[in-house]
Image 1 (cartoon, each protein chain N blue to C red):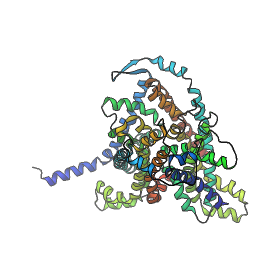
Image 2: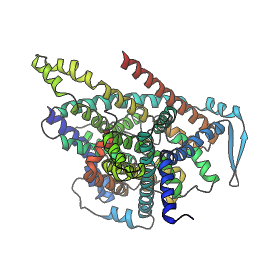
Image 3: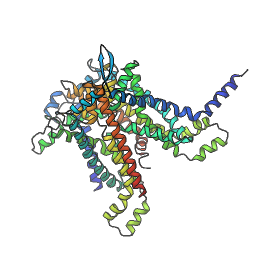
Image 4: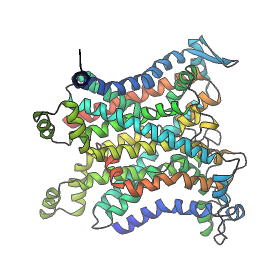
Length: 266
Length: 302
């Protein structure tokens, strides 16, 4: 019973990927006829990656830059904020206010704020820049990073830090030399998730940057939106856009599961 | 005269004394600028008409106009209805399937890590890629679903093109996307169940269904509530997949709240009216949060 259910679930997850993967190697004519016996081709991939009318590689560069920058920034300020909230006795209105605010922001639809962001970035000349995207991705990932890092700090026995302080470490050194090394798994979990969410983010990138600064999801969407839909390229682009997620699933699995389920169970 | 070493010590000391403040400050400042200020601005936008002439924006104070647009917006009631149907149906299905999977796989001896590993895949894949993949699979002429129907002798169905099916197809994709998330949360809870209690029930001769309904499920309730509340609120944010799959169509038959906000803001260029809708949306989410908190609290003290 359990095995049957497990196999069915895994099949349901894998079949769409398999079907799209197969389609991505088909000539347009084979896609349209729906045949299963066909001569595989790499045309769709070469067209997505190399053709002059495709912006895919530029988008990969933009996405990498935005994701790496926003992930680094959010890890630094998110971890500092989490440590400050965890370690020091803040007044309740500060800690509850800040954490409640991040929770509320995490839950409201992003599209309610894209309008004001558009106006604000336009008025200070940052509209259509990667910097604007980085800033917004940092704030989108900040709530997750702060809660995750707080729960990792909470898991450290307080005696460890007290021992460091008694031994003459000043607070900064206790944080840097003792506490930070202990939460490396948390940093990896938060970093991986922040990177993936930034790489995947669509609704802000769609509206705040134009073609030159477009990210991967925007370009993938364009393949599906064009008047003359190119099915093969659509399949190939979807597969390529999924690669980072796939790589992280294989290498960062343990940390991701910890990150996704943490806090919700405690 | 201060030596460089003394000055350095002074800086370190100052940093130490104010560690708690400068630790929290960057996050607060960033958040105030990027979320606080825009929300305040939304309130101003909601009572204004904003137009662009020769690339310059001009604001006029027209408090009544956006309300008139709201009342005249014929898409609004289908959008609200679609969104409620979408959240209710999709989240119910996700909870039921996710819970069943978590219980069944939790009871297995082996295969757990394989299940967990593959279940994170849909959560990490770009939602845009999911939308694009399913758009191909839903294709009327060569898509996967109509191929399957063809094998068992059923005529092809217009999954995304017919008003009665479009929303259902979008729900199907959302269920595929988010069952794994519910599964991961509930599976972690199942793994964390106290063994002694389950064994005690077994020793005392409880039947399997008694064990499930009287022991396992009551112990899982906190995790179930957390998963349910989170998923339900986040389901209101759904945008990417529906944008790609149907664009809200045909007509408004699959248009969801976030997509409608996008259309008002960026297709109709109604920044004022869009802001008014946004204010209502945010107020609604905050109200839901307060209610959820109140309910879980009352229920915890009972």
